Image (cartoon, rainbow, N blue to C red):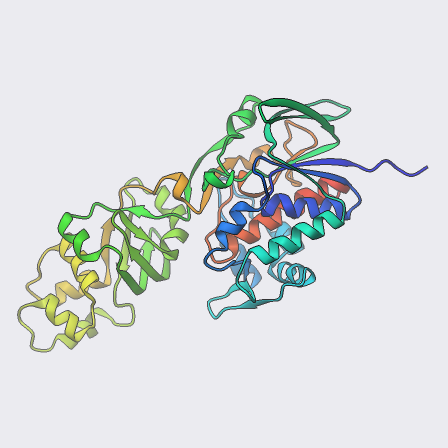
Length: 403
């Protein structure tokens, strides 16, 4: 007589949930995936609108260093990542018939750069290996006992219940709520006694109190080849000036540092390839109109000049302007709202999870993806983290593997 297949419910059809479903089904489990939306992978598709950045070609330890969170278990995460790293993710895509390439900045994309073809092939593959999809099912709670985990759903205002051997929760954080990632699971788990670190905006823009005059001059302009610092962290890249403040990859990556600051601020080096002394020397005999002269002699663009003028006023000597241009402190007021953010900080606290991402208060219930209190910058690290946690939860829920 054959052994009964282990039944698993996966709640959430983003990258973490889909990867968990794939792993569990390949290990012989009977997998049913539920999602509140009419189709899966909606946030995955939004992320791919400007080019689907699957992962990054960074070397392992540098890759690992991009992850953080409160009480973040670095050694545990190292083990997760070793079992499904950036090379595994590229091989996974290739096995689906999607070749990838690494851009000079390390970002890894499908050859077409598009998300939809990969998602279609992935869903087809999942159906072929037996994953059952149940759409328009809103998770309403669960109950755990020794025999099974009973999961409650709402569908077309009717309540339903189904029993499973294990459940994987992969409902995302609170960003881009129109895709289904709306944080509605938070009060349900809190009612079960699970500690949730408050959800906050991550990989998002930050607001700055521009004057009307500055805003008129700089809104929509790009600042390129910058060094941007917050506390001890520094990054090189490009920022876009918006009506409310700034957007851009360096700012996204500095989010953890900015949230630690009582009064958040960044320091920008507008001319990172020159020392202060070199900038002063390039001014030569200039004695007035220092912003105009900096534009001519330093190639300091009008946007940078407008920002410096707002926070430092006019300069009567080249040395003072050079010092400000090399370390322009810009106070920020707050992060943009959660619904605008690319991703979420906060979520299920690490102390609530064992090494296999199972909730210790709810045996047989696992978490994956952005529901957990970890974060990573864009550039492939965020997507990789979703796959990594789905990989762990899917394996453990299906066959009891320990990590």
